[in-house]
Amino acid sequence: MDNPHFRHIRSFVLRQGHFSDAQTRAMEEGMPRWGIEYKAEKLDLAAAFGREAPKVLEIGFGMGGATSEIAAARPDTDFLGIEVHGPGVGNLMKLIDEKQLTNLRLIRHDAVEVVANMLTENSLDGFHLYFPDPWPKKRHHKRRLVQPEFLAHIVSRLKPGAYVHMATDWEDYAVQMLEVLSANPDLVNTSAGFAPRPEWRPLTKFEQRGLNLGHGVWDLMFKKRG
Image (cartoon, rainbow, N blue to C red):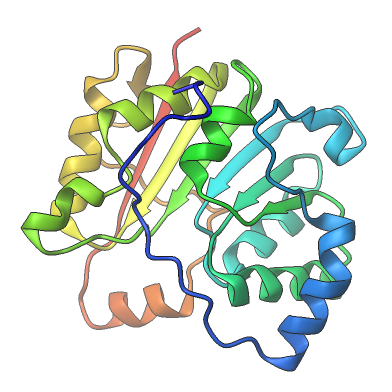
C-alpha cells in the first residue's frame, strides 16, 4: 500500500456539492492557513502543526461540527482531518476560524491514498472514524472502509499504545467493525465488545435525533499493543 500506484476500491462518492458563500470564502481563506495539499510524499506532522504534540487522524469528518468540538476540548492534541466533500471542508474551515482553533489541519483527498503515501509508520496517537458511509446494500459492502487490509495500514501508522475509536449507527456495520478490529493481532479491545461513548465525542444532532427515535449507536475503542 506504500506504492503510490496502489489501486483500491473507493469507499466514497466524490460529490462537489453546493457551497454556501460562507463556505466558499472559508475555503479560499482557510486552505492556505489550515489546509494541506495532497502529495505522494511523507508528511512531517510536527512541521505541519508547528509543534510536538499527540497527533490524531480522523477520516470523513462530514460538516466538521463534532470535529471542531473535539479539537476545542482537547487543545493539547493535534487533529488531522481528511474529507472529500468540499462543502464539509469549507464548513470546518469556517468553524476553525470562528473558534480560533490552532490544532486542526485538513486534507481534501482520498483517505486511502493519504494514509498510504503521506503518513509514516508509528506517527499517530489515535484514529477516529465516526459514522462512515454504511453502504447498506449487501452487494456494496465491499466498499465499506473498515476492511482488514485498510485497518492494517491504519494500525501500522499508529504508535504502540495509540487508540482506535469508531462509531456507527448501522448495527450490521458495527458487527463488521467489531469483527475486523478484533481480528487484527496488533489491537486489543478496551471493552468486552462495544464501548461506551467517551465524553469527548459529542452527540451530533443527527445522532441525538436517532437516539430519540430508539435507534442504536455503537462505539468501538481499541488500543494498539505496546
